[in-house]
Length: 272
Image (cartoon, rainbow, N blue to C red; front, side, top):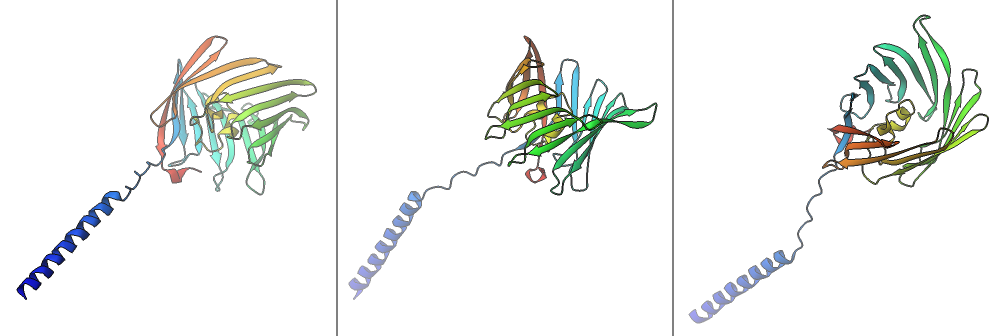
């Protein structure tokens, strides 16, 4: 009897050893969970510096809604928004003096349908109408056509835009009435655009000479204008650890302008 009990005890111990070994093998064979990917950082530019010029960009708190571009040469652009966080007004100042205002009108879908232009005359203490420009959009809600009018309501210029599947601008056909035409062709890189996270960057680029506002979703590499006002520019970049351009070089007629770019990070949920 004792021998039988001893055999049973040894059998139980053997079975437990087998089960323990099998569990270890299963654990060893179980594929490890892939490492968690770090969430992509959302960055917006806050300063651009070049020889003799510094641009400081300001935003609504914890958002990508651009409210000001301040230049150390006395130029300043202020942008106002509606309660629905849509652009309502853009004002341009020189040494604290207002000289241009753009009012943005929206349709029922809250898309910008018209920009109404005024110069401000301080002697008359009033706005002087300068005309407007009106938008038509493509299926991706990007402007496909911008028609400019003078203060009498007559058409003076037409821009027709086409885009790459990435959303980058590729061509702009320009008609200055009645018959002066030109074409602008763009190429872009495949990296994160300087202004990719600035809400309505393309809209503010229409009132600004600053090239970085047109760099979304990627960065402009070349700008070639033929016909009236022919011109050619090329752009190159150095990128930071997050993949955004930290330096931009613009070449025009063999003259190179270099720009240093500083960003701040935003919470992903703050992007409009």
